[in-house]
Image (cartoon, rainbow over all chains, first blue to last red):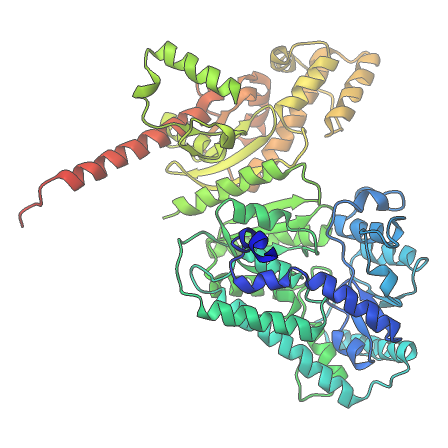
Length: 395
Length: 237
C-alpha cells in the first residue's frame, strides 16, 4: 500500500526506473558503513582530475564530497571569505558543521580515511589547506598546460606519487593488472553514459535533463557497479520508450559543476518549458567523454585521458570551445545557458570565448551567474522565459 | 493579485468597455504568472521589444532602466535576438538613483536636471547602493555641490548600463524606456557614452504593456483567421 502513496511522485519522473533510484543514497551510505567496519579504506574526492582507477586498484572505495547545498554555506563563512565560490564554501561548511557528526549536514566525512584533493582553482587549493586540519588531505598537483608533452609527463609523475600514497593507505600493491582491470571498469561506465547521452539526441528526448543530472551528481558517489546497474536500466527503458510528446526548446548547460543538491538553474529551465539535452559540465560530458586507452601503459594512458578534461583552470583550454561547438551540433541544441557560480573567475572569463564561438554558428547564449541561494530565482526565471521566447520566435 | 485586478477594472471604466468584451489578456513584468485573469504570460524583455518596435519600426536596440533592474535588448524586426540583464543588485537601476537622491536631499525627478547643470562632475566609486549613499553624504560634508554629485550619480548608472549595451553591440536606432528614461541627465550621459541619439517614447514606462497588448491582439486575429478558414467553403481549383 506504500506503493499507492508513491504513485503520484512516480509520474513526475520521465522514466519509471528512476523511482528505484530514490533510496540509492541511503543504500550507499549503508554499504560504505558496512565496508568501513570491514576495514576497507574510503577516500573522499572533489574533482574529476582524481582518477577513480587508481583508488579502486588500491582496493579502496571513494565518495565525492562536493557540496551543492546552501545550508552549509553560512557555516563555512566563519572561516572562509564571503566572496568565494559557493561550491567550495558549501563543501567546507559540511566538514566544520557541528551538526555534522550524525546530523544530516554530511554523513560522508565520518566515513572517510583521507581526502584526495587536486590543485585546480585557487579557492579549492586554499580550502584544502584548511581542510587538512580536520582530515588528512592529499593534494595531487596538476600542470597548467595539459596539451604539452611536459604537462602529461609531469602529471604522470604526480599519479605515480599518488599511487604510492594509496598503497600506503591500503597496504595493497597497485599492479599493472589491477590498474588495467579498473581502467576497463571505468571505461565501461563511460560507455554506458555515452549510450544514455546518445538517446538524448532524440527529439523530444526520452528523459529530461533534471533526471539525468540527479544521476550524474551521484556518478562518483555510488559504487561503479551500482551506477552501471542504474544506467543500464535507464538506457533499456529509454530505448523502449516511444518517441512522443511536444517539441521543446533544446537547451545545453555549459560551465561550472552542479554538485549534489544544486539543481537550481536546470530546474528553472525545465519548469519554464525547456528541455536540457546535454551538460558541458563536470556533472556532464567532462566526467565521461573520453575513454582511457586500454592498450597503452596503464598509468600513462590514465594521465593522457585525464589531461583531456577541458577544465577552465587549464590554459589555453581551446579544446573546451571546440567541444562545445561539437556538442551543439551533435545534440541539435537551440540555445546554450552558460552557467557560472559566483566568483568562479576561470569559467566566468571563458564565457567570452565561448560566446564568440557560438556567435559564429548563430547559437543563442544566455549567461547566468548565481550562487546557491534562492534570492534570484525570479530574476533568472524572467531571463530564461525571455530566452525561450527568443528561441521560439527565431526563423 | 488585488492591485492588478483593481487596475484592470479602472482601465475598463476609463476606456468605456466591459470585461466581457475583452477577448484576450496578456500579462507581462514581474508577477506576470500571478495575474489570474490573464490568458498568457510573456516576459517583459519580449514585450518591450515588441512595444518599442511598434512605436519605432526601425529600432535595433532597447535600453530599459526600471526600478528593480536594467536591461539591454538587441532587436531585429521586432524580435529579440540578444539581451542582458543586470545581476541581482540595485546598481545601475532606478533604485540606485532613488536611494542616492534621498541622501542628496533632492527628488529623484530633480536629479537629472541637477546633473545637467554640473560643471565639474565628481566620480562616484561605489557601485553598491548602500555604499554610494554614504559616499554621497561624505561628499556633501566636503562641500561638493549637489549638481556635481548628481552628475556623478547619473554617470555611474550610465556607465554601468552602457557597458551592457556595448556587450550586445547596440550601435544605432536605440530606444530608451523604463521610468529612468524620463531622466534627462541619464539620457544625455548614455547618448554621450554610446554615441547615439536615444529615442524615448512619449510614455516610456508602458512599452512593455503595449507589447503585451500587441501580442494579445495578434493572437486573437490569428485565431479569427483560423476560424474563418475552417468555415470558408472549399475553394475551386
